[in-house]
Length: 86
Image 1 (cartoon, one colour):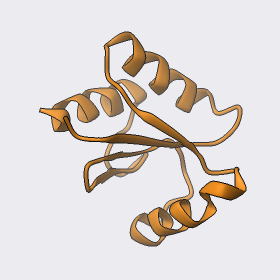
Image 2 (cartoon, helix red, strand yellow):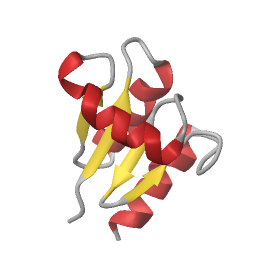
Image 3 (cartoon, rainbow, N blue to C red):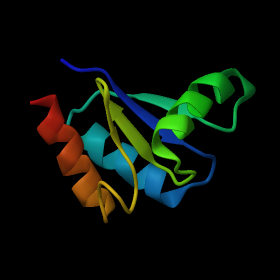
């Protein structure tokens, strides 16, 4: 199974909703809080690729999904994540 990483920030209702949907649907993921200093380097690499400072950003394997580009709703984000998990 592909590795799923979700880039989040504190108190983000969209991030919380996505995490809840994926958890309820049995999708494993790793949360990366971009506000934490230990995640700064990883997030900077994601930002360089996406040029987006919106969250949640989803990474499935090497594929990145960005709000308002890859998906328009959190439900769509969850469905897209599951689709790329195969």
